[in-house]
Length: 200
Image 1: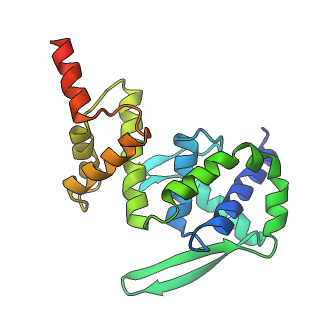
Image 2: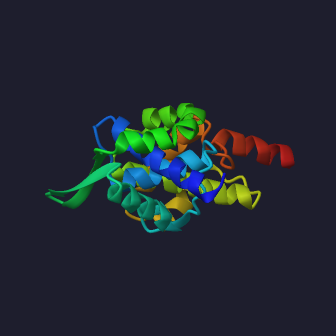
């Protein structure tokens, strides 16, 4: 896929996510984390290079693509103020259908994955998406190093990055992701004990 095709694909995915989000819109955090989960868990070839920042996996190219989508009026963003701060509501724009048509083949190939990310995470809060994507990131880093940390150890590592979350809550989220088969390296406590016993 050349750069032009990749750009069409990215803009189509952004527009598709904005148009189909359960709330009728997505925020910037959701867009970032959905893109990460699509690429990392489902293998959708979006070509982003995510690194771990304070708010979880991040690639500035996602925001650059969002800006392009806004300029082309494929999506429109509204700044909303809340008691605790502000956020953005991203909806399909007046030229959204053009963006969807340009990336239609890509969308069709990865429709199941887009359905999956919206079905699994579409109603989750920004804070939960931040935590869940960080758990996946830390798990994938462990897999890259051929490590098999227990859920408890994984939660400790995530809390080092996300100290504002209680470790018990991180363990709960990690256990759910593990049960869904979304973690590659991490093992349940029982599995970890079994492996340790077998090794001994």
